[in-house]
Image 1 (tube, rainbow, N blue to C red):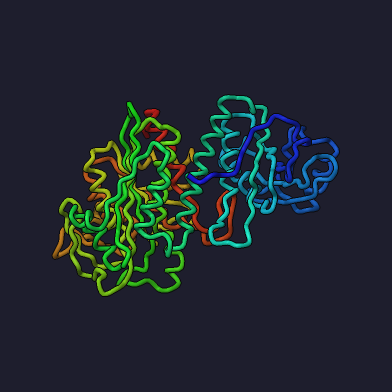
Image 2: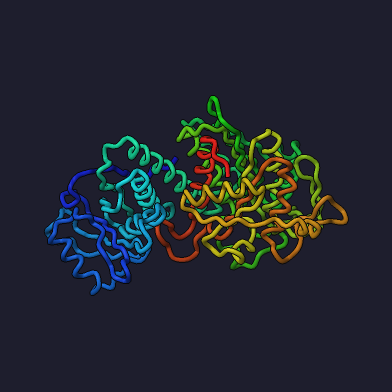
Length: 498
């Protein structure tokens, strides 16, 4: 997996740390900004900072970052003030610390090193600060000739620098950051470079030297295996589909979790072609598969005590003389037939194949992840993902997401929507009721999960940030769902259930 910025813990005097920038938290206390240095800063510097907070307009709001010259009282050249929001209702949560650390590090392009003087009195706080800082250090550099130059060395100031639990928390944060960064890299890559075969190659390469094993089914194997969804969606492209299986099977595993990811490496809509503007971000339509790949690799690196099988359903949805047509009938793995009414509702077709393959192995639970519907963004916006499926698993995912710091919202799967998917010529159609389109897609997928406990994560909006960066979240690929999936797996290993 991708190497991330180096991070260390230190109990040294922050004023003496030889770094380019010293990051200090500022809180909003009853409408007034307050420095949270706990007396660790030299009194003269602390007094100067307090005096300039209001004149500089610093409020201590979340995602607020202000840089000022440090002066002669510390070794650092800059002091970075990062907001943690209101403390009126008690202490800060882990996500607040993640965002504060991430926003500060994200603001420091061109700086080589930074020390974070943020609340880090517990292992949980150390973990949050470390994770946020590492996630904030990500930059898209693959195609840039002029940088950017993110922070490469981060020090978290804490009295727990020698604590075994704190060091373990940092290692976990580093593994999570690598996984998120790896996901972001795949999503941000040009679709000229990332297509089904090259994505499969990237999975094989990423798994080298790990405890994960990768198996790739090419177009011939897919056709022979009855994977009609993948074959049908991919037949319009000169670059054929793939189904990639990524397996991690530790000894004495407590459970078997299957993860399924939608991997449309570029989605033109096929013959039901999208408007040109809507295609500009369609390189991100493989974000679910990217997240599943790196969640499995993170599980292997963390040696989580569950068997994890990831299924990456990879195809490029293109219009051509060989593309599937509206009104075509395809046969999904396992024998169910689908009338294709709209070729731009292709994600559910490749997921259906992969879900059936996953269920055939008899896992205890299946979770699929997909940038599936525009309706998700209409319902929940661009920062909140949806979770549907078996009620207990849905709640388990929501709880894991809350702990991980990702926003997922539980949504229903009304049985009455199933009637809208009826087809006069096939077992089911790939389109149904216009209203509640996100739920209709979930109802469609439910058929292929069978009786196995299952959850469907629609990450269409949150997977790709078209707006301004915030907290530790950059523009472009976000890596959303990776941390939730890892937390879900850890909870399964520990025997937690919703």
